[in-house]
Length: 496
Image (tube, rainbow, N blue to C red):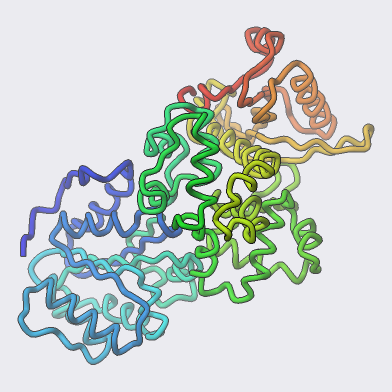
């Protein structure tokens, strides 16, 4: 069994991006010092966690074990078989319980730090609920033979609610982990590069459906990438609207795979309500046909599972906005689910897609473009763009009593200027399919006046317009005078 030197490990050649994650994992796996160390790796399904950890085990000569759904006895047997293959033992290990199994794990690292990866850890705990406590007891010993063994134990799982509680204050493993790594989706710029899409408009449309989940390109559509803007409609029909492709059923699977989601019909209805544009708890409850108190638990569970995000309103802290975290789920509930009967005949994709265009643009692409604009401010805009360092980027609602209406603000930027924190730096509007003009700037200026009348310091706030198709000449002239910040697709993907 090869045991290469583990420090300064180069990232595997076939691993795209993930430089930060690889650096954190290799630093943990090769950390010096006696005794065991514990790390936790989590993230939504299909983000490449197993790929990362398999690469780490191969690069370090570590032990990698992927649990499966099995009884407690079979899980121990499979674990023992995997240990025997790793050690080259002719006789399979047969641990009678997980205390013996953990002893075998510790024995792997008797002469050097050895990464020990247990993937899909929630499967093991399901039939062995004492396992976290047993692991805590094993790594908590502070003397004797314990200090002569140096496993670097990495627990991994995709059940976000379970993994989120694994290190919580009520867990036996609370305070024991030296690494808590969440593997997120690729950023929208990295996703375009991963898919090989250079046309920015096509990149947004594709990202609005598949997001930044790496597996969706390779395993789920078999490297079928839209060849250009003219191929996008056909690509949708032959992939996400095609029951023969795995990606067609992926969104329902993501819900079915979460153990805490029991009344799945209710959870699907909640997600459908959010996909339709209901972002408050009251609006979601009304769309579902339940009282707000009846859906508080589903909303919490969906958040804990990583399927919903809850964002505070930029101007009203007691108001929460719910958004679907995975683009494929939003697309499924807006476009696929309402037409599932026709799509199941495997002959209706063209018809469905033709009549779903308005829904796709208004309920999927429009909100997604707004989210990308907020991501641009958070991750790519330089401090000089808004005159300060962006700290909080969100959407918000501003009431307009005189006009008896309210204004939705798509991109609100609060930040730091010198030593001052929380300064309002910008209010912005995002339009995916409309050329923006002076009327949009005038609306933003009115919003700033309303905020100023409420006592909010707007002296440093810059109006910003974000457009997927461009700006009228008079708006560009206003930008040249420094009256407004303009962000088009080229700047969204390549500028700061």
